[in-house]
Image (cartoon, rainbow, N blue to C red; front, side, top):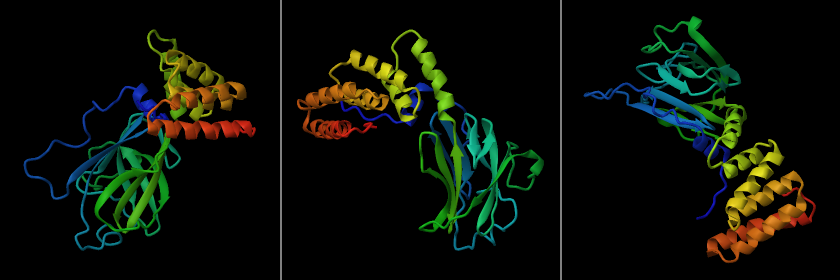
Length: 295
């Protein structure tokens, strides 16, 4: 089976216990559906679950911001219940530290800059009982104009990395991008170290690639990828990743040896694997022969 490059996010999802068994932030389904459809989105950022539950009003021919939703007033950021957001670990929202927990998401819209507010969970309807004394975090975010107007209010995620994502508040002709960051290294390294000390099979490959991709202890990464190859010495994907890690470690000869073994194994693989790993290993060998790090 083709071995794909495991991203840090995939590693984290595999190594941490999911909190998805927790109750949904949405209320139970109703016999008569609400005017504004309810929705939720669950996004992993590294090992962190970010869940948002909200209602989705439509434009319906109305002018939204500045009229239906007044400027300079606290908004529930959706319809009906105040929008809820849950973080399974501590995060930074717009650079502000926020503990793990469930919050209500309010905003203060303006033509060019919004204030995004996280408040202690109060189970509020709308923003009528909003009290700034309950605020946990406030950040100012520049508003943007989406390429296409959004008929239905939405909260989405993009620009994902292993330790950050952008949460977009989008409606009509306005998009408010809120950056959410997690300290993925601080969360995962203790779990990797514990897994390596525990009895049973070790996650050598995933651990090695996490250390490699996050510029951590490259000697440990080299030790672990070597152990992974020892368990499966003819695996061309493992051999190529060993070459990458040894190159970053500065072990040029070891990296060249692993890359050549990977390419030799690829020669007897399926046409697609042969083409891919021949290309990858040739490029790495050329960089190493030219004095590059091979990263």
